[in-house]
Amino acid sequence: MHRNQIVLVTGATSGIGRATALDLARAGHRVFATGRRERALESLKTEAAGLQLETIVMDVTKAESIAAAKAEIDERTSGHGVDAVVNNAGFGLGGPLEEISDEALRGQYETNVFGLMAVTRAFLPKMRERRHGRIINVSSVGGRVTLPMLGAYNSTKYAVESLSDALRVELRPFGVKVVIIEPGSIATEFAEVAMSSVESNSASPYAGALADAAKLRAMFDNTAVAPRHVTSAILKAVQSARPAARYVRPWRTYMMLVIASLLPTSWVDALLGRMTGLTKAKLFPAPRLDPSPSP
Image (cartoon, rainbow, N blue to C red; front, side, top):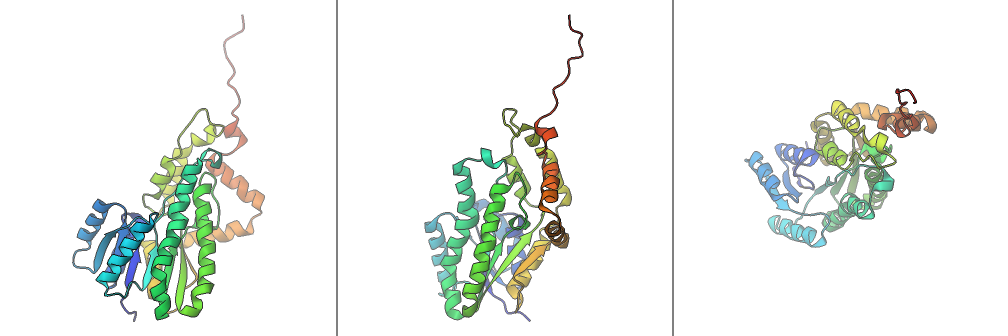
């Protein structure tokens, strides 16, 4: 039997975050669902009618927003704070790394890495003082295997993996467990947001690959599974007395990681290049011959 806990979920306006907030509340936990979109949070609260789910507008990239949310949660919980944090807020940025601006790259890190750490640092002290708590970081299979055209996003997830590994050891003496969730292809807004930044540009040296962006999006959609595959792992991470350090979902994604680790790097590179159109045939197509006879 698990005891009901107070759980903060970031990025709860859609996708995995929204499904997680609802499933945790249905399991009897008191949930503070946060995000930037107030209207989406109102919709979530309506759907969760009758459950212990409360919403708070919070932008993980703004220190004052995190501080205000923390103060409000402390007030609503009579100073207790939260027992677990689910760091889910994040988004994907697609495109060749050469063509991603410094501003866009920094924005990716502000949300996916620095925002995650800012929220963790804000809510961790009370858990550490009680010698009990959970930090659950939603990473990605892309934090273990890098996909071309998603290098910016994947690099943030590699950072999340490393930060989580360090936190897990640092916080262990204080009774705070750190868990990493590694989703594969999930049916959420992620692919739409990530691939929307991959625009076909005939002037780009990557034009041949960018023209196939729709095929890459279709591949994501065809292999995607429902968010419940991930939320079930997050529930385990919150409720289990001895949670695993990592949960990979869905299970077939774990098999992909195993296979990738066994193959030579050159084979994996060639396979990923073909999947994303990053081949000589795509990038340097043979010129069309003019069928008209010469004068």
